[in-house]
Image (cartoon, rainbow, N blue to C red):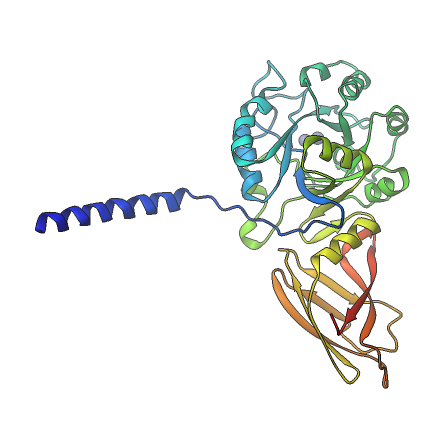
Length: 374
Ligand SMILES: [Zn+2]
Ligand SMILES: [Zn+2]
C-alpha cells in the first residue's frame, strides 16, 4: 500500500513538473479580433522586417514566432539586397528558406521579399514582395533591380517615404517616383512605418490621389519586444488586407487592387470605403430598447482597439453624448433622445469615428441607424 502511495506521489510530482514546464514553454497568440468585412476576409500582414541576413538582430524563425504571437496571418522578411553587415555573401533567399518550415508549422503565410536599398533619395528604399528568386535583384542600377522584381510579378512599394535621413525637412515626391508608376514599378506606399514610429500624412494623400496601395509595416530590426511595449498596450504596425480568399493569389490580388488599411497603435488609416466597412463590422449592436422617445442602446466592441466616437454636425434634433470611447472587448451603453412626439421605432445619428483616419486631419463620417424592433 505504502509502495503504491509512493508511486502515485512520484507520478503526480512528475506530472506536475511536466505541467509546470509546459506552462512555462507555452506561447500565447494575441488576436486583435479585427473582423472580416462583407465580401472579404480581413488578413493581417507585415511585409517589412529584417533578420541577421541584413542588418536585423534576430534569426528568421524568430520573426515568424513573433508574428504568430501577435496575431498576424502573413509576413514577408525583406532583408536589404545591398546592405548586409553581418553576413556579406550568399543567397538572398536564405532567410525565407530558413523560416519556411516554422511558418508552415504555425500556419503563418510566408511571402518571399527583399528591400531594394539606395542611400540617396530618390529613389530611397523599396520593398518587392511575391518574389520567386531574390538573387535576380542584385543590380548596380536601381531601375534594373525594380525591373527584375516586376518581371517576377512582384508587388512593389515605397518604404518610409518620410524618413528624416533621406527627406531632411519635408516629405517630397520625386520625378523618379512618377517614372516608377508609369512603368508599373511601384504599386504601394508606406503610410505608416515602424522605422520612424510614424504616420506620413503626405503618403496618405498621395496614395489616395495616385491610386497607390496603403501599407503599414514595422520595418523591425530588433527583437520586436525591444521596440514595442506590449505590456503597456502598444500595438505593432500592420497592413489589413481585404482578400477574397486567404491564399497567396488572393492576397496578391487584394494588394494590387488597393484593398488595404494601414493600422498602427489605435489608429486605422485608409479610404472612407474600407474604413467604414471595418468600423461597421467592429461595432456589434446588442440591444435597442425604446421607451417614449428615448432609445437605450447597448453595443459591443469585439476588437482589442478602442473605438473613438464623436458627435457629428447634423444631429440638432436629437440628444446624445458628444464623445464616447468604446473600450476594447467590452459592452457599452448610451441613450439617444429622439425629438419630442417622434413615433418611429428607429433613430438615426451621425457620428465621426475619430481613430478611423480617411486622410490627414480627416476621420470618417458615418450614419448609424438603431432599430428598436430588431
Ligand atoms: Zn529601408
Ligand atoms: Zn527596412
